[in-house]
Length: 260
Image: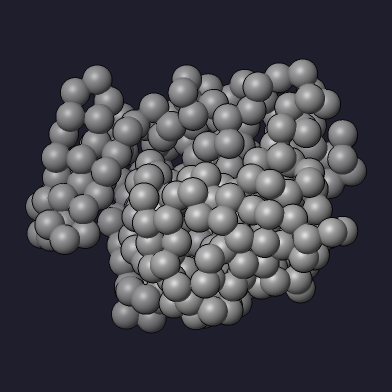
């Protein structure tokens, strides 16, 4: 394909796996690393097997995530790692001090009861920086530090095929970009694209799971996206994982290019 001009339209960080996105205006990326502060924390389910002293990648279902708990989308959360404060809004706002055991236990119990989890005990708030709780951490440390990227043109193409509106937030990407032809990113594994001074190499396509079925506004499973993607496209992929090859600072509206 001819070189395409890109625009960065949205930047997301997910401080706590499974919880709300934090929208950023700008971010500085380092080579070989993901979004700073992205998915450094998580709520591990009872019996997950996660050991903070010896962190090992675990399947996503060992954590409280949208794939299993659609009601998570109904909780609007914000975590400030500087103050260790977790704010959870569901009708009213509750704040928890995650810097101490009492606050962590209270937040875990709140999620346990609000989400009506079936586990015998509440989850545990865990972290072991620089370990990230990404879905693809089970593949390799390189993938654990990958940045997730969504091509908005691909989302629009699927909307047209299905004749239904699809909120890009369903895909929980770090970077949302516009300007590419639909689906070209899926066929460009190994290629490098640029946003400003930042160079990103495409490592893999993103296979979608049941989390994308959940409407981020209503917290209901109203669109069987993995099934529909396979039916319409012959696969369940939407978006890509990319490695930061050359670091730099990104900002909303940043432009770049993709040669394919």
